[in-house]
Length: 432
Image (cartoon, rainbow, N blue to C red; front, side):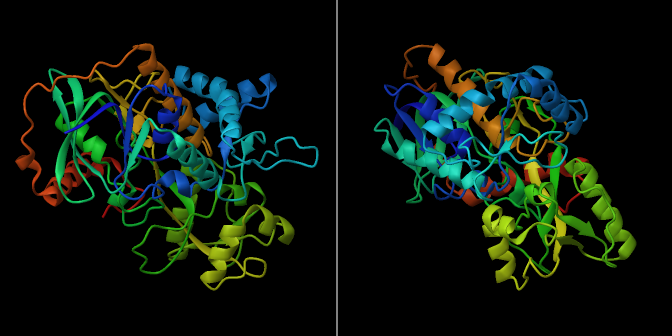
């Protein structure tokens, strides 16, 4: 049996940042289903929003609400925006290198549905820059243990109190983890979809476990499709995302006749619908995206990885358009939480994409994902810390590890549980 004060399940930005915000006298165990860098946080290209000044608050708030079809939790939105400066200060202190202008001030870009430039970025690998810095910090902390290739099989609970989890370790053995508090930071559900920008191993395990234990869920059918991913015929790997920032800097979308057919800066759900409509009209599997509208120097400076990827696929973006198609991208629903990351089960928290505090409403505003994940990971850590010294729980009864002997069958069942719950509500992308 593993004993720890805090068990965090997931090594993306929310899990790592939560661990770093907890007191160093607490023993923290972070487990991840794959390797430490295979989280969607590493894949985020565009950037992270920040409230630039008080004059931008109302505009930022309205942009977020409008994108979410005004179904957002207004308090969550306020907390996210008001906390943004503090979180960015933390990231800079951790060594995150955001783009700056000639005067040394932050350089801000803009993406779809934003009325102002308020997005910080690091080339087109902002997520990697942030998450790798957080990981490096976590690896330095003697109180944080990181366990790769460790799969969450279940949580241990009794009378709606969480006492830890059952995991399968890298060596294939099952073990019980006894924890004072457990934080679910397991990411999204893209592995359930034929076309998704997510890693394939992200299949909504925590959502399935929440269903099993009757933990409150929210908006499971609120699933965002990214309008522009690189189209490959017959592709069964994760889809390569062509960042919203590309359109924010001036890229255009064309139909099969190379005619512009839409405002490229519409909110993602509206733009996705327009692309699907055009594809149906043209009887094509993709539309064209034109990056030639962006100066070549800016393309190579701001989007080097996108340029390089397209080149590997045989396209010179300085001379020709690229084929793009919508794909599943982000999960706005998930395990219901309050404004401190608490779930409906005591001693159990959820943060990041697997959680739903209502901040995004029906549709996430571009570049709010990294910010939201970090803000509420910090809130969860503060709430846990406020409880004072963690008391090691006594497990209510011995856990029958034999019930999890066939881990593959357990995970297949979880996958089917989540699919069954969301299948009827999803129509914009193909579920596997």
